[in-house]
Length: 503
Image (cartoon, rainbow, N blue to C red; front, top):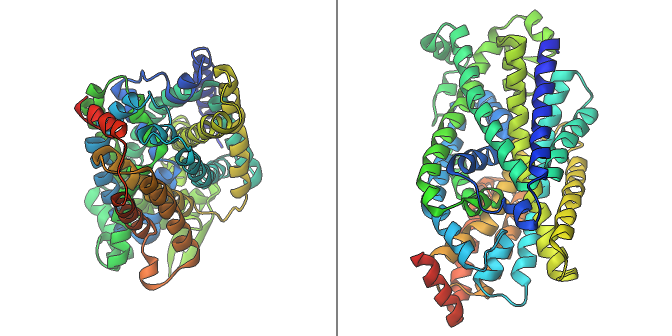
């Protein structure tokens, strides 16, 4: 790596750690640590939600998928855009109000327990188990992304790169909690936004303009320019179904809960959706035009950045397509700009890992430790339990990520489906239907999570190639409704629902 690139990269890392230290001084209780005291403005909330949502898969996984398969990968971007908009439009405001009415809930398990007045605590425990299970895999995907970045940029072994990336992210999340995560996400979100505009624009320019770039891709394979050709119905449905996942992602939903006021939702939605649409299609075009650029690049250029290239049918391609954004960043830009762009990749990785670690640590501190073992635990004690949980969960995720052949997109896909199917239906129904019962909620949670595990791990081929979030979401929804029909919420629960709706 060029010295200027390295210095730029290090300055960025020190800046993130500085934010963690500043937030540490403002974190005095568990509400501060896991929800920032409900004082996020719309800009910070929107970019923090976007940055924590769009993990390393936005700059590595999605461009890699389009690089490998062409414009058909854009169906994923369409599904996510629709899902994110519906989440901001229908869930954000009502969840912000309801969590305040429901005993000022500060986590998703906390909200579900308070929403249904569940004295048995089974909802809290089941929710926390689901969060810990799928966030471990989700966090692992970020660790893989960080390892690929450090491995390519610093010529490190995969194992060494994995540990360096993990240590940096754990450090500021451990210190500053939600405020550190949200403030760093805001900076990282801006950086990711600029990077996803700059890389495809410069790549197109280097290829001779838009028409020439499109022709270059078409000359390699015309089907790469067609969203439908070569893409089956099950594949399209599966890609669009990613949008269902938004309703159940704890690290995104918690941003809605942390808004200083429900009145900030429209402004936050506008900022968040603008950021997201530009980012998604910037990633798609990075993969698409990166294919043409790498194919035309000379060997000396590729060797200068340490890119591993294979020849397939006379075409020159990267051995690991998920490194296309990294390769273009190093080839197309001045070393200082390259350092900033590489920092943007790390931003995408860190902004999601930190959120996942924070939600997981809150599940352990609030939903296990306090709920089961020490109900009289002090706020300071819970904050430190949360901090140590961050380190513990991160270490498990690193162990899962040890395989250098791991795919960022595959790990994200599995975790995204798990959360979407387990939490999505119950979050929607709990906010919009007063008739949901505790039994229905527990049944739906378990059914969604189990379906994803069984469908994803043990079934394959034919209709079973359908993305596991689809059967999981449908089965969870059906069971919540059917089981709830055999019972009735208490008058107190119904009265609280009416109060939250009117708020």
